[in-house]
Length: 258
Image 1 (cartoon, helix red, strand yellow):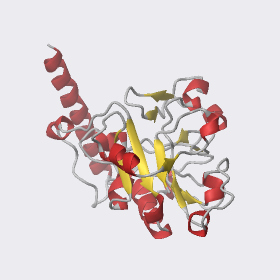
Image 2 (cartoon, one colour; image 1 turned 135 degrees about the horizontal axis):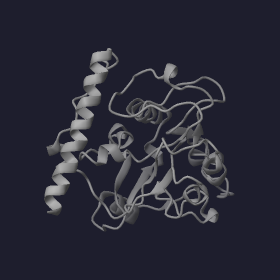
Image 3 (tube, helix red, strand yellow; image 1 turned 120 degrees about the vertical axis):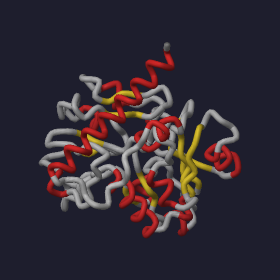
Image 4 (cartoon, rainbow, N blue to C red; image 1 turned 30 degrees about the vertical axis):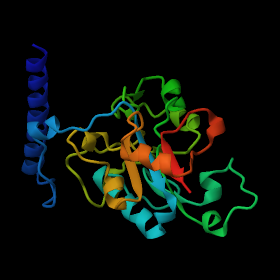
């Protein structure tokens, strides 16, 4: 009975996507470069984990590679490119001082000190953003990914105040006119809604790695932190890594290999 119900739900989800795509095609909104819609078989190949995590080989992340990853992420998720301080960011680069303000290396090498680090939502084990959200628009899945239900967000921005990493952005205006490459397979947001990185949960569901991981070409390890044989655990076992703002007590799932 459970399998029958699961199959029904998968078929319903795929059918809904198909209807949505059909409507987009009818309206002429779907771009020619849009990828094929996922099928039931794709969902059967979905990736699963007890605790998703990421390890970033920071020495390999040049500014050019960070920009490549940013473009891949923002194109995948319809993140608008808005000039000025109202810009929306899911993936971006920052200096060592901005990335690790509580890690004061008195004799830090110049290479590390002047390096640019890729930043994104840390998918914290104890996310403050979940605790302070009054509508449960922000919630945590059993596999550790901190998600957002954009329809529940009322724009109070408590989550932005609660996040110690500045990983959330607020739409002060309608973001849709600023989207350069529209992806019909991911929802757009509207004015008054907060948004952030979701570890590409929609890609994991169909067996794909996060877009930034693919774009990084081996500079980012991703996998199940609970699995000692996973790529991310192997990277952390063989290299020294730090996390951002450990004193905040949120236990990030993103590690930086120096």
